[in-house]
Image 1 (cartoon, rainbow, N blue to C red):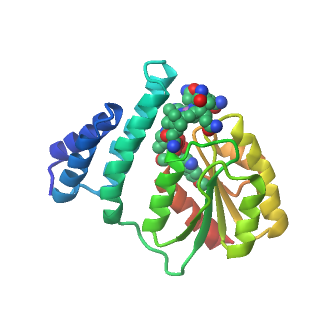
Image 2 (cartoon, protein in one colour):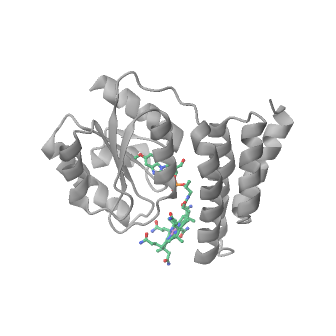
Amino acid sequence: MATTERTAEILQGLHDAVVDFEEDDTVALAHAAIDEGVDAYNAIMNGLARGMETVGDLYARQEYFVPELLLCADALYAALDILRPHLQIEAQAEPRKIILGVVEGDIHDIGKNLVKVMFDAAGWEVIDLVADVKIERFAEEQKRTGAQVVGISALMTTSMLAMPKIIKMVKDGDPNVRVLVGGAPINSDIAATYGADGYADNAGEAVAAAQIMVARA
Ligand code: B1M
């Protein structure tokens, strides 16, 4: 079991390797995390995802541009593949289904993919519509699959405007279906204004929020 200092070193290493788009390093550190008993959830959220947040700041400051973003994403995904099978999240007693997708016009899917990993690990069946999803498809897929929850992600202030339309379509189809929203420009006030049943700030909270929503339904 890694000491507190070693755990912090591995998490910081994962963060730095994502920022420096050093895929070999993210892979080596992901293996080290597993071998040395660092919790996979901690490594994903406080190493990889935190690294991608720093990348976002570098992009905002115009120190990084689109090619760097893509290389950082590659480094993140390489480590995520190694860590994913080791995630331990309390599984559901009853099987649950969630539709997940990023709204139309928006191809930012890293956050949604982290959300998917957490739901998979918690034993949910995830119907992943991927990104740039046409607004009608969320309601169509919910109807087809009978999913209890529809999860919608948006990363842009422009694309998030599709959310209320999607939520209305889903609720018109079945008012008992629960809708969870998330993504960097969203907060709980916006979620409530849009008519969503819940909001989650990050991937881990998304599972907890969905479980509460379904339990209350
Ligand atoms: Co671009 N991008 N991007 N981008 N990109 C943003 C979003 C932007 C804020 C950057 C900026 O200007 N500062 C800005 C949007 C501005 C706005 O709001 N209007 C922007 C822009 C403008 C663009 C382009 C237009 C750039 C261009 O081409 N000129 C273009 C848009 C293309 C399109 O979508 N049509 C574009 C393209 C790209 C890349 C392809 C290069 C790449 C995406 C790669 C990919 O996803 N496959 C990219 C990236 C990487 C970013 C930033 C830098 C980082 C996003 C990210 O991956 N974060 C981003 C800046 C930022 O967000 N600060 C930016 C890490 C990820 C782990 O966090 O996605 O927030 P996040 O997810 C979190 C939570 O939000 C939450 O959990 C996740 C994990 O904890 N969460 C949920 C997310 N979804 C959830 C759903 C839930 C619950 C929680 O329930 C269902």
